[in-house]
Picture 1 (tube, rainbow, N blue to C red):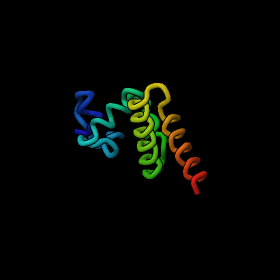
Picture 2 (cartoon, rainbow, N blue to C red):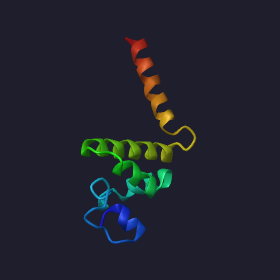
Picture 3 (spheres, rainbow, N blue to C red):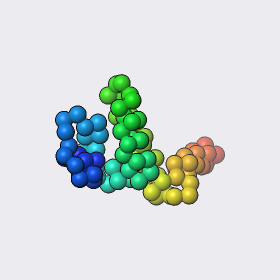
Picture 4 (cartoon, helix red, strand yellow):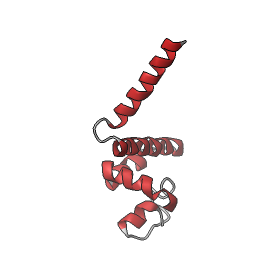
Length: 95
């Protein structure tokens, strides 16, 4: 079973949209995405994309954003962007 079906306590089928992106080993990532976006919304986003590369990129982005919200509930992904921007600005001013 994939992490999504295991979390929902249902049998994982061959046509499970989230199985390729959330295998059992990525249950932590799935829980974070589920907490922020919800299973049905993530499923709609993933199935709405035609190409597998687009699906993979979307799931990676959703996972990154959900983990950012988990680390910093106030600033979330914006806080991560801001830290990188500050580091880049500091680096540029140094050289």
